[in-house]
Length: 122
Image (cartoon, rainbow, N blue to C red):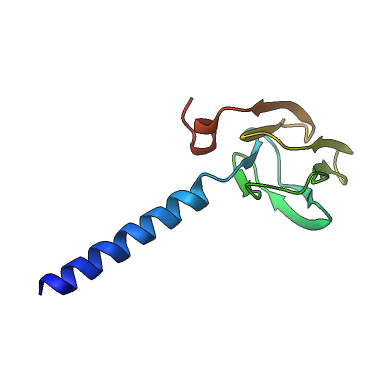
């Protein structure tokens, strides 16, 4: 029985360590104003890996990027169908918050460089 408990404890610690490793990667968060009329389409280009999705009013979408990106790694967030606004980001950063207003325009971008910002601590 003790052997099974030891194995379970080791597996639990490994799982927690893996979760902490994944959860502390640099983060990009898109915040869409809750008073907006409808969803908006955005493009997220992470070093030529393009994602096209919708974000709905009041929603927050989060994206993790690699811990040690290549020297020429870039991220581009754009709203091509609504306002043609965009933000181009290059690491290093810990967390970037992109705020989209009710008029579907990017109203503010906040770049955090401290490690604890990745997990939401200020």
